[in-house]
Amino acid sequence: MLGAITNFFDRMVRRYLPDAFLFAIILTFVVFILGLIFTGSSPVKMVEYWGGGFWGLLQFAMQMSLIVVTGYILANSPIVKKFLGKISKLANSPGQAVLLVTLVASIACLINYGFGLVVGALLAIHVAKRVPSADYRLLMASAYSGFLLWHGGLSGSIPLEIAGDKNIVIEKVGIVPVTETLFGAPNIFIVVSLLLSLPLLNRILMKSAKKVGQIDPELLALQAKAMEIDEEVLETKEATTPAERLENSRIISLLISLLGLAFVIYHFVENGFDLNLNIVNFIFLFLGILFHGTPRNFLNSVSGAVKNAGGIIIQFPFYAGIMGMMSSSGLSEQLSLFFVDISNEYTLPWLSFISAGILNFFIPSGGGQWAIQGPIMMEAATQLGADTAKTAMAVAWGDAWTNMIQPFWALPLLAIAGLKVRDIMGFCVMVLLWSFIPISIGLLFF
Image (tube, rainbow, N blue to C red; front, top):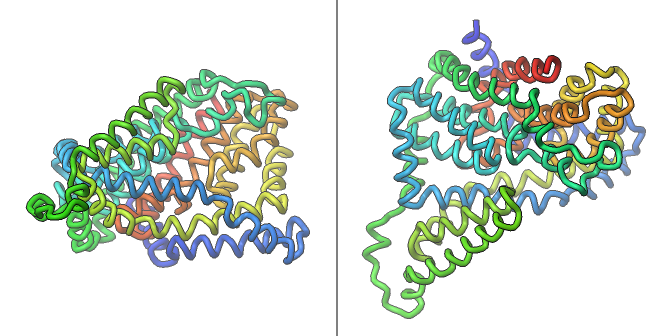
């Protein structure tokens, strides 16, 4: 039965789901029309909201592009390739390959979501090279399924936001420490349940993967080739000019790497375990320079890495425009208030989770979504006497939940994998359906 359901969704998404760029364009038109119908905004106003928000994610787009580029560069270094190769040796069969990739990606995303996306994708490539009989699409879907856990982990933007003394809901609920959110009983139950069950679920989906066909082996061969550096050419080319000697200087790479890593140490001493996107990119960048040995080796790797970031660069502005229409027209506020109106003290967290999951289709950014939905839900929790910490985490889990069928966050992984969103989304639908159960249990009964 599970195989039949998986095959059905796989056929549907492969037949009808457009490319991620077209998906963003379709969402743009959908939100535009919804704004006209439900908010009374004029077409001129909706165009204004769209254009006004279009460049609102430039910093974030650059961060995510660098996650792909720096992660690829680091993974392309001899040291990291050897390390990932050793980890991949733990998998000797297709079943073990799926279990390994899911577990490692999940743990990595609990540490940091940007780190987890890159590590999961790169490990999947190494595992696929070692176990070529494993379904490549399922391996990448397994890597992406680990991203479901990110908002319940150490880089969760909502629990970290409300734990600070400058959070946007401090006047309503005060400071909510991570002991009540990340380390509260509902979140621990959900995280542990998913950490244990997702590898098994993906292992079960492997049976249905055989029925829908293997990925083109030429794609995997191209990816494996792209991950290689022509070491012989790099090492044997003789530097004949001062410029070439600088480009092949190990001393320059070592000095700039030490400077970068000194700042990393300073950052953690001053800020504790603050593993945000900027510091992750910083670590990846300077470790990449260090591990490649010379500036020329590093730049050769950069040339291959930047090819993977094109989709992210061009699509993020469209999602920023969608966010602009949702927030400025009041459409996102109306959606949140609808769920508040039908809630009580007991059901508010769960209904907040559902509303956040829907809103995440149009505003696929935890921080951006919280800025709109957080004040509404926290006000409602205070008035109804609901658990504020659980309600906040419900919004966080709603944001993470529908990421499984929203291609926005899959873009970095797909760029590294060389796949289209339709290649993995059939499996991700099954992850979405299953994860609804433990998340709901955690929010309703803990």
